[in-house]
Length: 161
Image (cartoon, rainbow, N blue to C red; front, top):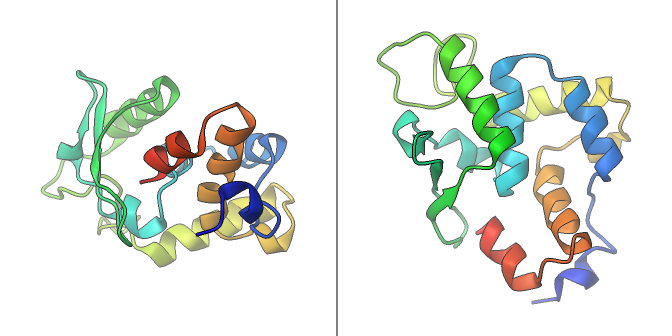
């Protein structure tokens, strides 16, 4: 496995400015909470789609993440800004029988395709380069931003599962 620094030469990621531009275009409460959760925890679209309401404990400020592709699932602290966005989204969201955290507009569990389509739309509005119009770039971005902030590769790996 290559060291993360070597991978930085080939992966597509967003700069801090591009992340800010992207989030400036996201006004919808569900989508802000969705993409903040993806970015802060380095989630894959399929991983965020697995989240249930019961996985989020705002009182304890904890979130349970289920990792795929051999990642390590576990409980993480909720970042303050993500907690605020999740709280606003959940307050607005209708109370229904769905256990999924993020629902589509049709009130079904949000799909990976819907997440990809939403991201592509916001990335286009933020005038990001077309080769960065994939939600997985958020996973790459948080890894780069953590390394730039002085976190170790082990810390990045732990955060991204």
